[in-house]
Length: 127
Image 1 (cartoon, rainbow, N blue to C red):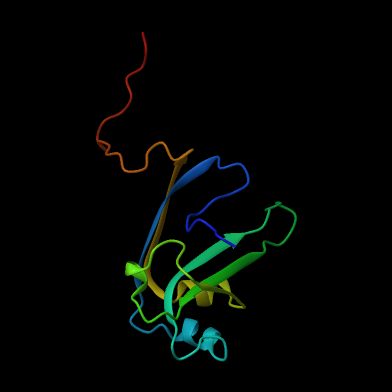
Image 2 (image 1 turned 60 degrees about the vertical axis):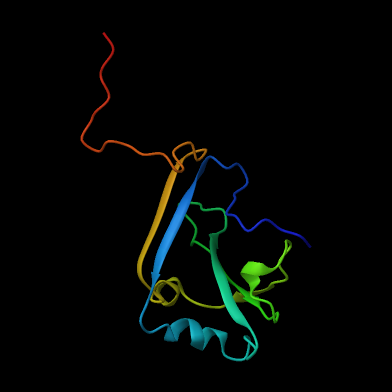
């Protein structure tokens, strides 16, 4: 099934970007991949998502890893890139321990994506 490699939600009220720095020791991820990742596969990326969140219920999360096993570097492969997607049974803490730093930035419908802003200015009041 052909899919877009982009985050989305049912309504898309907020959209944005994410960035992360890999941890020096990615042991938690490698442990979770034992018996799943084949020797010829490279990790292309990750996905972290949450089901519908209700204040009175525990949150459920889903972690997926995207794996590529082709001989041609995946950056040179025409779309759709053939990836194997595997759901990992990993806690949120163990997932985030794979990164030194992690940031997600969202704006209403993604309208600030790629824009610059002046942190020192404040909106002027009308009138």
